[in-house]
Structure formats: C-alpha cells, structure tokens
Length: 419
Ligand SMILES: Cc1cc2nc3c(=O)[nH]c(=O)nc-3n(C[C@H](O)[C@H](O)[C@H](O)COP(=O)(O)OP(=O)(O)OC[C@H]3O[C@@H](n4cnc5c(N)ncnc54)[C@H](O)[C@@H]3O)c2cc1C
Image 1 (tube, rainbow, N blue to C red):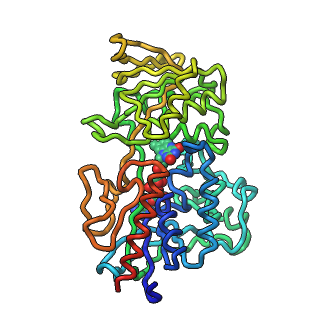
Image 2: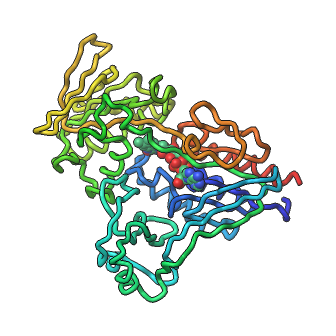
Image 3: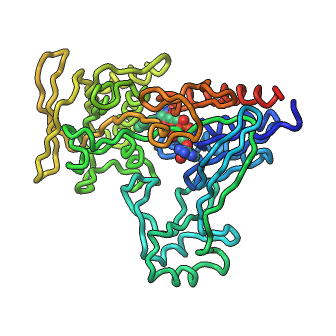
C-alpha cells in the first residue's frame, strides 16, 4: 500500500458510487464522494422494493451507510458537483462546487417545525406527485439525515417566519455557494441515469392523460412513504387501480427514441405487476411486450407470474393510447403479433416502461472523455486513471452496478499504487 496515495474521487453517490467508495476505503485508501443531490442512494432509493429479493431498498442502503459512516477515510459532499478536473493519473486536481443547504446542522429540525410553513415545492423525490414544505427532509431515510431549504420556494413573507420557528442558529439564509480544490489520484464516474422523457412518446398519452404514468412513478405510488401511502390508485380520481396495462419498451428499442434495450424494464414491470397483485387479489394486469428479457436466474420471476390467471401477456407494441375523458379510462390499440389480431383493450391505468438514459448524456463530466452515441461512458475510459461504473456505463440492475463498481474500485487502487 502506498501510504502517501491521494484519495479516489467518486462522482455520484448512487449504489454504484457508494459501493466503489466503500470498496476503496476498506482497502485503506481515502475516498471523496461528490453527489449532486442532498442525499446519497440515487435512483434505487426511489424504488418500493427491488428485485430479485423484493426487499425495500433501505436494507442494502443501511448496510452501505453504516460502512460509510464508520469509515473515517470516506468524505461525503452532497449538493455538490465537479466543475473542472485537470492533471493526469495519480495527480488530478478537481474543482468542486458546494451548493448551500441553508441548514447549519447545529440544531435539530423536525416536521413539527416545518408544518408551520405554508411555502411549498414539488417533491422531486416523489417525482412531483406531491409537495413538500420549502424546508424539507428529502426522504425519511436520507443520509445525511438533514433538512434542506429550497430558497426559491420560500415566499418572501415567510422568510422572517422561518427564523422565528426554527431554533436560533439552525438556519443561515446568508449561506453561499462554496468551492473546494481537491487533489486526487483516480476518478470513478458513477453519475447514473434518468428516465426517458415520456412526453416525447406522443402516441402513448403521457402528460395528456392523467392515468398514464411511468414505471418510475409507479415505484413511488407503490411505496409506503410515497404520495399515496403505498395505495396503487389512479392519479385522476384516487380510485383503486383494478385493471392495469404495462407497456414495455416505451422509448427503448425504438429507432426514433432509444435504439438500445434498457435492460431493467422487463424485470421492473414484472415486479410492479407483483406489487399490484399482492395489494389487490382482484386486480388484473396485462403486459404488452416485444420480448420479455429476464436473464439467467431472473427468468424464474417471470415464469412464476405465468401461473397467475389475473396476469396476461400480449406480444405486440402499443400503437396508440386514447382516453375516455368522462371516466379517465384508457383504450390501447395494439396488434397481438402471435394471435395476429388487433386489440382495442380498455384499462383504468397504464404504466409506461420508460427506458434508461445516462445522466452523462446531458451533463458530461468535465474531462475529455469519449461517450458512445447515446452518452454512456466505457468502463475503462480513454483517460488513464478514470473509470466508469453502473448506469453511466450501460443500463443495468443493482447487482451489475455493484460488480462494475467493485471492478472500478480495484482499477482505481491500482493507479494509486503506481506512483
Ligand atoms: C422502473 C425501474 C425499476 C428498477 N428496479 C430495480 C430493481 O428492483 N432491482 C434492481 O436491481 N434494479 C432496478 N432498477 C435499476 C436500478 O435503478 C439501477 O441499477 C441503479 O439505479 C444504478 O445505480 P447507479 O448508481 O449506477 O445510478 P443512480 O441510481 O442513477 O445513481 C447515480 C447518482 O449520481 C448522482 N449524480 C448524477 N449526476 C451527477 C453529477 N454530475 N455530479 C454528482 N452526482 C451526480 C445522482 O444524483 C445519483 O445519486 C430499476 C430501474 C427502473 C427503471
């Protein structure tokens, strides 16, 4: 081990970034995580349960957080982004921007305080399906477990109220953006993914018909700390969803949208069918698919579902979704390619399995990296000392993300030991 080794910089604190960080630190090297949100955990934290074991995401998360918290070699910067990286392997210099939280962390804040505010903001953790107060805890398991103030959402009239209702010194409205220069030996890029913008699929009615939701929204709707307390109900009227269509490849494997397979959507939808069926024994689900792609041992998850007579599978791409505006019910036009029939089936809610887009497609890392045509970064990048892991490399599940992250951690450690 090189005792004078510089830290490894991990950009992105989702499951891939957190895994890479603990693997590097537990070998004995320092790590700095830079995460743009106010909390660690990434997209996995927004799922209700995760396949294949169907445990809540907090299970694995708690273990990782314990490892991070107990390890003095790991520093975490949230609300932070890397603005510039210069130098080369073994001696990179990064400029990190830290956005203000406006909460000092010196006094405790809780919901009995925030409830006194009327200023609200869209709850981005719940994908805008509900609201939070302007001063909010991002979610109940958030790490760091600290409130954040959305300065823009706080009305001018409530600026004084805030200082009155919070303990003295808890809020610092003069907190400013800060910059940090750090020297690091290697960089792991783990900036993950975002869902494909479903409003671009204009034949499928997302954004026009309120009972057409996306797979990521469905995760929040099914979640007990989500906008409906875990009840799978229709957004239009709050009625229980009894007959739900799952539309696969909504954007993926489509030359006009995402030509690649997003790899996780089939398992994602099968899992969500399970949420629906476990919640309501009378509920019916129909999955419209091109192929069901459940690889290796995940196939069992699919086969088990074939025994459920309330779940149907139709091989065919949905051409059009129409709404009956009076009831909010939806009709799907689809050609069943096995039966060679055209269907016009009615449902009370539709879930679009929108695909995975790398965040690096819109927000490139400030390094001269090569991206593929869709914005993904190859694992061993063309810059010595810079590695990519998880969904920034390719669409993948948690198991694959953690394997990537462990490989990237090993590669980064090798760089630190070269000097
Ligand atoms: C509907 C759906 C359901 C799914 N369910 C499952 C499941 O049940 N089981 C399973 O194994 N997989 C599931 N997946 C896949 C799973 O979400 C991914 O495998 C996982 O999120 C990949 O983790 P990641 O760390 O690569 O990316 P992310 O989870 O996206 O984390 C990336 C992190 O980087 C941060 N970041 C982004 N840009 C920057 C930046 N410029 N600077 C600093 N930080 C940045 C983000 O805020 C985020 O915290 C599902 C996917 C979908 C679409």
